[in-house]
Image (tube, rainbow, N blue to C red):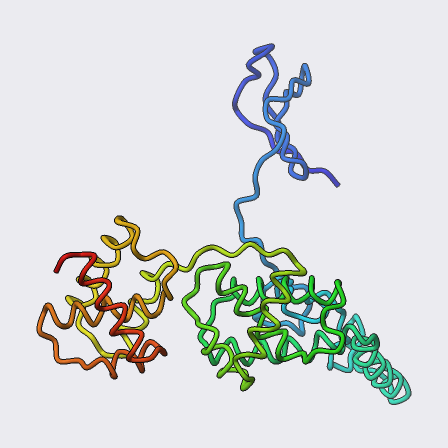
Length: 303
C-alpha cells in the first residue's frame, strides 16, 4: 500500500496545490495539477538488514565476494548446517537424514568435473604461496586469470600443476611490478628453478603475454630491509639508480643485481659496514655479480 505525506510547500507550477511525497517511490508531486517535482529520493539509511532470527547480530546482506582464485569463483550454493526450516522450526528426523544426504551430494557436485579438481588443487597451492611470499590479492587474482587461460589452451596437459601455478605467479608478479624473483617463487613452491622458468617461457609464448621491464628501484627497499641497511643508504642507492637510468646504463642488466650493487656502492660512499656477501645473500645474487655491477656503476657515474 502506497503511503503519502503532505508538505506545506506550494506547487511551483500552479501555486495552488500542496506537495505530496509518495513513501514507496519517493516521488514528490502536486495534489492538484499532478506536477512531479522530484522523481526519486535516495535511501540514506543503512544498506544491511537481518533476514532471519538465526542470523542474530549478523546484518550483512551478501556473502564472500567472487574471486578467480576459487575453483567455482565463489558462486556455488551451499546447504547450511542448521537443521531448521524456513520458519525456524526444527526438522523431523526423517527430513534430517534427507537434508544430510543432499549436503553430501551438493559438496560432491562442486568438484565433479576434472577441470574443477584441477582448479581446486592449483588454487590450494596458490593460497599457500600467497602467505609464504606475502603477496597481495591483486597478484593472486592476476595469477588465477593467467592459469585459467593456460588451462583453456590445454597447456596443463602433461605438465605439473604446481610448476604451471608457479610460472603464472611469476608472470603476475612481473606484470604487476611486484619485486619477487624466479628463485623466490621456485623456493616457495619447492620446485627447481629451471622447471618454473621453462613453464614461464611456455606461458609467454603461447598466451602472448607482454611483460614490462623490471625496474631495479623496486627491489631496493626489499634488499635493504633484509640486509638491515639504514634509510640514508637506501636513499643514496635510489639516487644512483635514477642517475643510471637517466644516462641509460641500466638497460639489459639484472635488476636485483643492479639494485644490490647500488646499495653496496652507497654503503661504501657513506661508510656503512656491510660486506658484498651480506648484500648478495639479501638480494639472491652472487658476489661476482655485485662486483661487476659495482665497477660499472662507479665508472658510469664517475664516482
